[in-house]
Length: 288
Image (cartoon, rainbow, N blue to C red; front, side, top):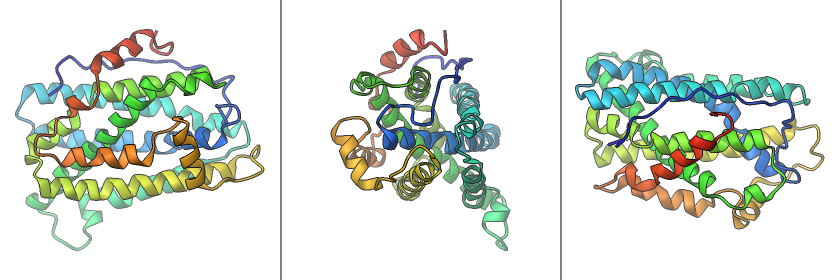
């Protein structure tokens, strides 16, 4: 359970000096992180839609309060990333087609139950199961965003590079709020379904392949769209090189952390330190 009041924060970023390759000499790491600008404005809206659907089923007032604050934070997150789609267009990267394809994918896989299950009768039991399953998928996804948030907050190597300060602040501000609200989705998931092991296996079995596929395809897509990148490097070779330099999380860190989501005593509060997140939020240029 979240142990402090979650605070939605208005932010403002100045993108006038930001280029798609926002880390000089690090095209792969730049575009791996840039993939968030395609996915997050879409899934943050989806998160809010699912949680809004869940609100009438919440009987615990503390969970309800946290869910509403979570929704407000996520709406701001999506709005913060979205302008970069048009901003990159000014630098010769038209990624609107990738955004549209991602939107169709989310709608197809995770949308309205009557569309997902076709001719099957979408009665109350199926609708409630589908709601709980989608909340579980969000909880599993939030487990990984917490890991990523902790990584970006604690990382000491990226700031040593010539990075764009606005983009670095975006990632750290977003990561800090992911750490701050890391328990909310799982609290709601447990409140609605009990979060049994079979359900956790199902949602984790969806989120790991989906995120793996998305990172690979979106990073390759962005590198192909970048007119300033003559050589398109291989994904896995670049991932290994960058993770060895601690510029991005290693596959071992991400996959190794996945098993904790399945533990009987799993508690998102154990995954990171809220005070580290709040310390950064207190000094974030975008927040201030």
